[in-house]
Length: 204
Image: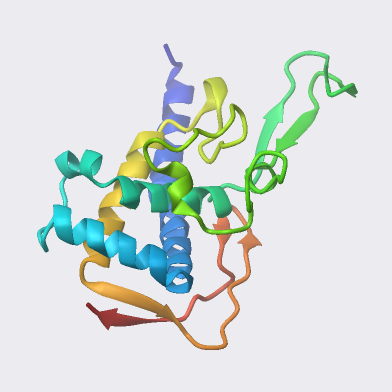
């Protein structure tokens, strides 16, 4: 159960997370696809075979594994929330470091998702990591929605929303990064591709 205050806070979070994080995730999806023509071609092939030009629905999502893999690999490379803060509710220690009660502990998905001890070619865009049959990430090495009792309540909503947006738009357009532009990750409330991401839309 939740208190009225906790329920209100969850509702506020969902309203915020429903646009801020997804918008930045979509920007990174288009940026990565524009730099990986082989991945874009595989995505288009899947969408053409499964959807044939029609709008995707929730029932189509299980049949779009590459679309999901593109979204999940983007979440790995550019997690919309790159830093997670937690307050210690008791005295403890982490890898031998004392953590007094009340301390703020920062978990950084941005760092964990690119750690060479856990990922092969950690800085490379490889959607195939998340295809069915691929070895799943080791526990605690993939946490774009956090983990544990404070895991994002909108995890599935956000993933499915992004898949439908990608499947809808990628059927009609190929976004192309403006020549010479360098996209730089900037961490504000969420992880953004700088102040602008100039792209040209090419019709398929």
